[in-house]
Image 1 (spheres, rainbow, N blue to C red):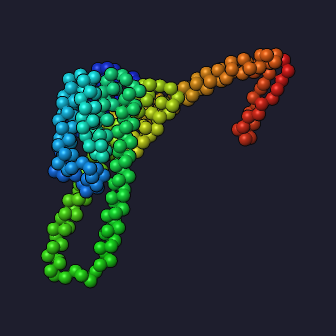
Image 2: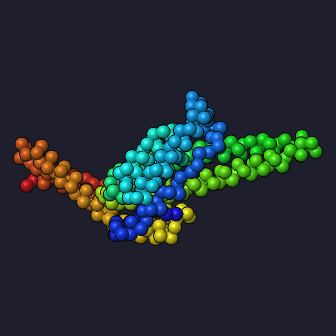
Image 3: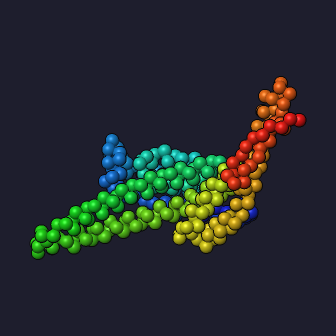
Amino acid sequence: MSSDAQTPTQSKDDTAKNAASGTEDDVAAPPERFAPEEEAACKQLPLATALELLGESNEKKTQANALFSSAKYENAINKYEEAASVCPHYLDYELAVLQSNISACHLKLEQWKDAISSATKALDGLGRLDVAAAEELAEAEKKQAEDDDIEDEIVSSGAQNSAPAAKAESEAELARRKRKDDVARIRAKALMRRARARSEQGGWANLSGAEEDYKKLSTMDNLSPADRKIVMTQLRVLPPKSKAAQEKEMAEMWGKLKDLGNGILKPFGLSTDNFKMDKDEKTGGYSMNFKQS
């Protein structure tokens, strides 16, 4: 898998080497027709209209990919957003691809917060696909179980029609497997992009989130050797960075609380120095004790 995610120590030259292949392979031709559940999800939108909109969206995505390859990232973002605006709203996979590509553009522009937001939208869409796929599989297994209970109607005349049915079922299974692989590929890209953006944005919450993203990536078997090396490196360097950020933010928060407390206690001739926090090593809890100055 080619990805734009790098460690914070990667040079801009390294970034440029990985830029060109970030989005082109995500372009897909419009399907001949949508799956029944997709049509049902948007009954008010005629199939012909949906196909036309998807075709228009893919054209804009192709243009955006060309802009990305030319390092015109702001223009590429605008074109990807145009593609997303016309894409039928229930096509979570196609929209996830667009959001992941938008995240890649924001990474190039070092717009970390926007990169995190776009990658998260992509991952949320893929999550909805996982739920739909699980429901579809459960329905297929239920139907298969019902078919297995019918054993006395298989005669020679019916057997003549069994081969086409088996072929259709096999094609459906291949389509499901391909979609599963496609979803995994885009999920890996979106996770790599969000993890890098989080680590660059910094702060305890972002660094912890980046660590979680890299942990998920470490369990995936579709990473390129280069991406896997990045993942393993980040899992080594992020924990101490996250801990340091946590301690810094906790110290800053405690300092602000002390200032607030001193303002409240001053009229009474007291300060926060009159109160001591003692930790109970057995329970891990704290107790507050008053001491006279």
